[in-house]
Length: 247
Image (cartoon, rainbow, N blue to C red; front, side):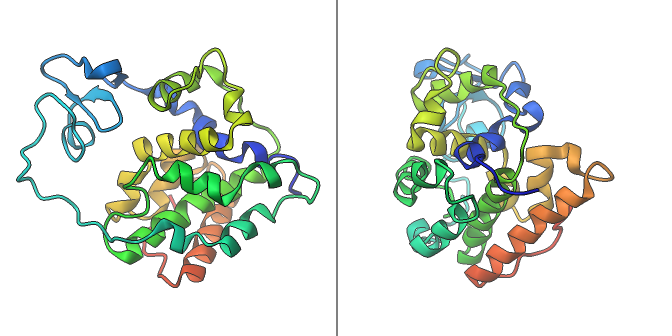
């Protein structure tokens, strides 16, 4: 399918595909000021729940795990060093020259947004970090080519509360502010995808997390397209793509 004026919404597709944000369990709710029930942890992103995602690294209050619990070492990789001007512009350059999104999304906006999520692209070994960044951009590139977008604005509420904008009443903020758009994508990624790619489960698990309907016999062509982008970006970063590439 030819690329069209979709790049301005490419990041949004990560959020809305399959309605994943709408699928939070009742316990997984945003807690303004971390006012969680006494038996729940307040995660680093301000959500109440239990388990590693809430009570582990970055837990703000509640029955957080002991500080003596081993944590995954940081690779100390600089996202800015991996996502160079050349690499970022090559992603944007896949859209039509007249696409407004080519000037809307900038590398600086990406880096500004990434600064709010310090564990993105920095967990595990240097190769692990590069694989996560490659996976993120593989999905972004694939979604850029989608013609039909799922505009499920009701799903932006939790992201907006976490980031600091009215996602329910002013969802257009995402399309008008590049940093907010990237932050929204990072919010979804860190809550739904980050842990599976950094734990070594493979790129295939990220496809399932973003659009599980493609897995199996759902849409093998789409799966292969995502894998192709991912392996290409891994090659450009000088790392092996690892195992379990499909789902």
